[in-house]
View 1: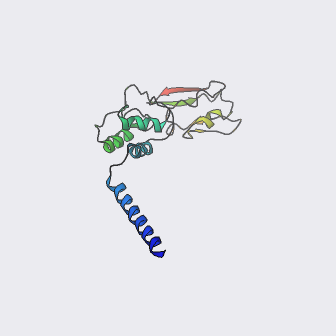
View 2: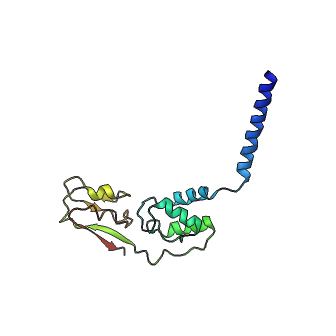
View 3: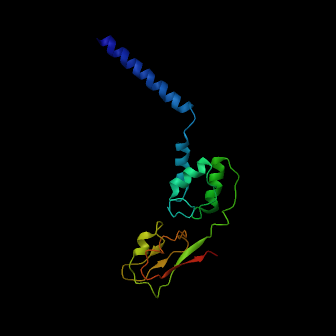
Length: 160
């Protein structure tokens, strides 16, 4: 009986080692590279690239359905890193992508914090019932703060 147990254990060990070696030698799946590309993106989920979030955009880039230059929050640095990873030509950020930042008209702001909650990068500061403001260097221009504002005091201005 012990011989049978030892034999089965040895076969299982050899099969496990064989599978481990095979997984290292075989080419990776597209899903792995999609995850790498997704990690390179800024994760603002702003949809400025035309996709619902960073993961769908990453899948489209890997699949060849989207250009690597459609992510304004990532900017030229992300385009450069994606080009190097995917072996594609480095191209400038798409001209159709307008870089802008949010600006709060502080005289109209009622301090409701709806915009602050909507901001994926915490670029809006201010306390409840007090005026809010945008940290321009942190704003990605995603426009997610504009819609929740009940007094329409947020506008998008071109980045200079």
